[in-house]
Length: 602
Image (cartoon, rainbow, N blue to C red; front, side, top):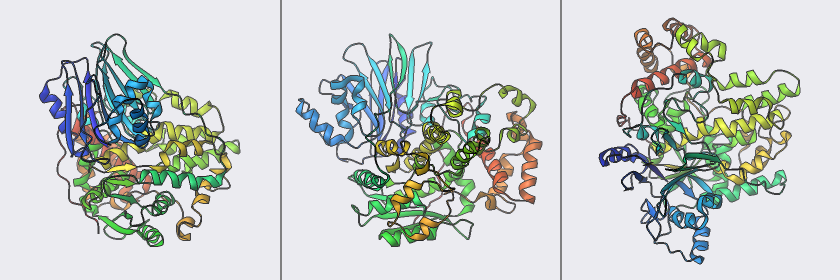
C-alpha cells in the first residue's frame, strides 16, 4: 500500500516533485522514491505491508526501460511471480508490486487482466515511443486523481488531491456547480471533482497517454460471471476471501462496529487469526444509538481482543479541518470524523492493516432507500425522485432555497449527477433493484464511500482491506435474485443467512443503524461544534462566497436550536464542511494539515 504520483510530457522542477511526494508521506512513511526524466516522473511513498525489507518503488524491469508504481495490494502476486519466473524473469524480493514491470512486458496493457486485488497503478514504458499507462481496480478501492492539459498534451496524477494541486500547472480553482453536486449526493459522483481542473479516474479503466495520441481512457469490460451459485455458498466464498486478505507481514486487526457486516468479517477472520484484535469507536458520554455493547458482544462471542476507542465531541472543531484536508474535497457524512479518529487509534496501537465490512450494503441491498425504491416500483408508485432525494443532503427543492439568486441561476441547467448514471438508473436493464444496485456500486460506492475509507485510513498509514469488495463476492452478489437481497421488508437476506449461527442473536436481530456521529445532539447551542459552525457560517463569510443565502442559513440555525433534528443538523454539518473546504483550498497551493488531537484506544 502506497501513495503514488507522477507526470508525463511536461517539465516539473525537482523541488516541486519533492513537495508533491511530501504531501502524501503520511500514507507512505516507510520509503520515498522517485524516478524522473526530462519530461516525466514516477514517484511513490511506501507503506510496507508485504516484504517490508523489499519493495523499493518505483519498480524497474531488468532492462530498466519499464517503470511502475503501485498503490494497493495484489493478492495473487505469489502465483503470478511463479508464472513469470517460468518465463525467465527474476525478482529481487517477494513484494507484490515487484512483479508489475515483468507482467507488463509479457502482456502489455492487458497485464491488468491478470491481477486480483485493489490497486491504482502507473506504468511508464520507455522502450520505444514513451507512453504512460494508468489502471484502476474494478471498484475504485484505490483512488487516482489526474489533470489533463489537452493543449500541451501533459498529464499529472496522484493518489490524493492536495498532492496533485502541488504540481505547478494544476489549478486549485473550484468547479462552480460543485456546491450543488455536493448537496445533491454528499460528494460529487463520477469523474468531476470539486476542483475545475481535477478529475477522478473511474473504476475499471485503463488510461494510456503518449505524445502521438494524447490521453485515451478505456473502460474494461466486467469479468465473465462465474457459474451459478446457491445462496448457501456465500459463507464459504466469504470465508475464502477473508482468509486470503489476512496475508500480511505486519500486524493486522479488524474494525467491528457491532453491525452485521463488520461482525461477520471479524467472525470469519478468527478461524485463521484466533488472536485477532478488534476496534470500535464511541464518544465520550452517553449518546443515542451507541453501538459499543454490540461490538463487545461480538468480540466476546468470537474471542477477539477488544479495543474501545473514545472520541471527545469537544475535539470536533480541531479534528474537522484535518479530516477535510485529507479528503481533498467535502464529504457530508459525519462518519468521516469517526473514521479518521478510529484509524489513528488503530495505528497508535501498532497495527498497519485493518479488515472492514465496507461494501456489503451496496452489494446485498442493505440500505433502506434500496428497499423502498424496490417496493415502490413493485407497487407501481414513483421511486426515482424519492430515491435520489434520499442520497442528498436536502431534496432538490429545499437545497435551492439555500442559494443566492445568482448561484441558483448559474447551476439551474447543470446536472447535479452524471447523466450517464441517472440515465441507466431510470431506464437501464434489469429490475429497479438491479439498476439501483448498479448505481450504488458504480457511482456512489467509489466516490462517497471508498475514497473516504482510503483517504482517512491512509492519513494514519493504515491499509484497509475489504472482503465484500472482492471481485468474486461482487459477482456473486449482483447475480442474486431480488428476493435474496430485499424481500418482505427485510434487507441483505442472503447475507443474514450466511451469518446465521456465527454471530450473537442480538446482533442478527437488531435494527440497522448508520455507523456515524450523533450530530443532531452535538450540533446544538452550548456545544463547541455549534459555536464553530456559527463562526464559519457567519453572514459576512457567506456573502463573500456568493453562493449561499445568509438568511436561509440563519433559518437553519434557528430551526435546529428550537427543534433539534437529524435532517437540519446534517444540512448544517454539510454546509460547515463545505466552508472548511472552501477556506482551506480556495485558489492557494496546499499546505500540510495542522496537528490533530491525540486519539487512543483502550
